[in-house]
Image 1 (tube, one colour):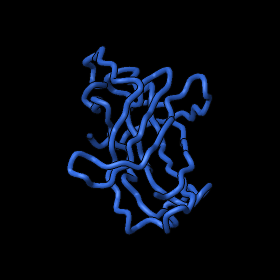
Image 2 (cartoon, one colour):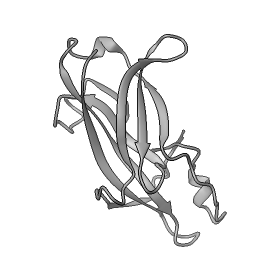
Image 3 (cartoon, rainbow, N blue to C red):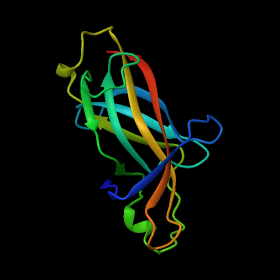
Image 4 (cartoon, rainbow, N blue to C red):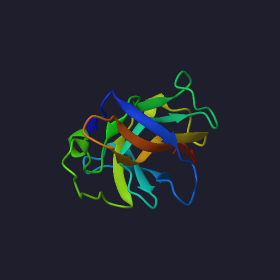
Length: 149
């Protein structure tokens, strides 16, 4: 994963028919038996970056009340990087759906059985109009409700 360039223009796209979104999040364990959230991002366009991925109280999108924060600033993922938009006219298309495992510390979560929200800002449709322009992406914040294991 790579940090998204600081020069970034965003357009909100929260339409279910056009937006890449967080579609699933399941508590699981990685190959080292460490706790992870297995997440799936999917939409008409593949996910290209995320930010503000967190576990928080239901319907609380603020960072200050989050139980766990994976990332605050935008990071490219799914094989994308900011260099792909620097005049290379890349034809790369990331996986769609895209699944990834995000580590977390269960000690930071509320008691088992408590409902939480797993949320993230999802970026898709990123492009540059020309080599001198900023990267432009469509974004939306998506959240899923899950019970702590």
